[in-house]
Image 1: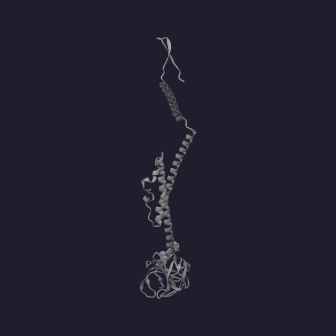
Image 2 (image 1 turned 90 degrees about the vertical axis):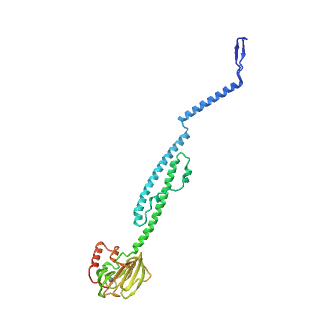
Image 3 (image 1 turned 180 degrees about the vertical axis):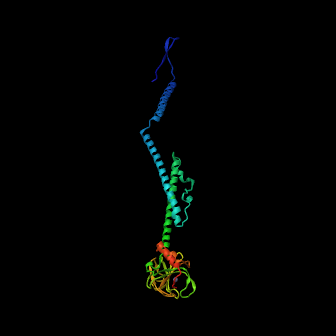
Length: 322
Ligand SMILES: [Zn+2]
């Protein structure tokens, strides 16, 4: 309800009504309300700078926690990465080298993932850069772990192969040291006892009584078990990897052709068959058909002192039997 205002007119000596326009009055009212609202709003903004609602406080706390966890997480990744690096070094420089496998180059181990858009979904957040870096680090770590794991699988296979090879290559005396009546006669030039000419002796002679057991010096397959004019009753074992061993002048053969034997298996007995002057075992080690000095193939059996004694005896000029 608008108030009616008057003024005193000196000319007429009477009070007259002031004519206030309605629109002006409304304008004033609206301005007034707006002013109050504006002041209230500014007041609220200023006030809210100093005071946070409990909800905001909770969110802020949570954000701080998350940031802390991210930092911690980042540190843990760096630590894991350092441990993995050590393992990779060992893998390349010890394990792979020992088993004669090529080292895996670092560029291959630590390569990231191609494609610019791989981490695009992580864009547009306050800490996108950090999250992207973390995701990238985890991806590289996972990839390194896969490569390392495959490398170890390969080493297990190589180790098994090496184990098989070590079990196959001749490594023990074919006659027990205690059974020998005389140290072996070696791989050397000597006067042949029957032919009476200088001839190279391609094996070692082990003197032992007839019937003394003879053992396979490595795992392999019997490829010959027969009689020959020179070698008498003889056994040939193929060990794989190019190695063959020959056991000659046996009194009795135990191993059959085609039979798989293990190192230390009984294959026959010492005798004096073929071109031989007395009971002994003539033993040969061949690699790709070429006779090698058997003295180098007893490492599984002899102590260094025994080895030295055997080597000395085998080099001495002495009686040989075939
Ligand atoms: Zn011989």
